[in-house]
Amino acid sequence: MKLYGIPNCNTVKKARDWLDTHQIAYEFHDFKKHGVTTALLNAWLAQHPETKLINRAGLTWRGLDETTKQSIVDNECAASLMLVKTSLIKRPILEKDSKIVALGFSETEYQSIFNPSKV
Image (cartoon, rainbow, N blue to C red; front, side, top):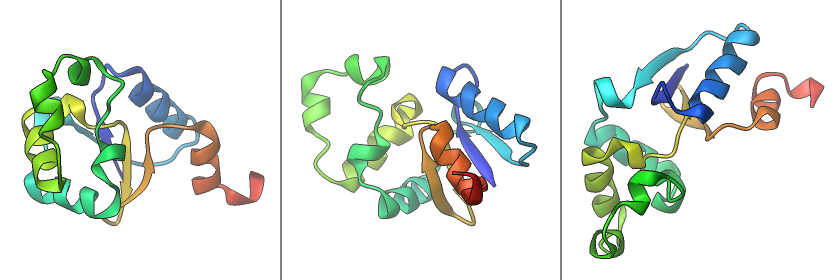
């Protein structure tokens, strides 16, 4: 299990705390330190549309000029932008066996993923 994100992001902190509290092992991948690859972004974009993978509520998105925002017309454009500006990627991304099992953090969603009998 791998959790992708940025360590100082509050949502990532909540996800890490939840996983730690429930003693669920995971590897943390810091976008800022380790980056992401085009192959990884393409794999994610094959599972979720760019509209879900790009964090349009964050400061990085709001700081982009309109031309850049409008230039995201397909997965290739989205991947190119997320590769350069990793803070645009919605976080955290929880991945197991190369599949996204959770995008963002919701305690209810994590509970259903890891303990479906108690939902």
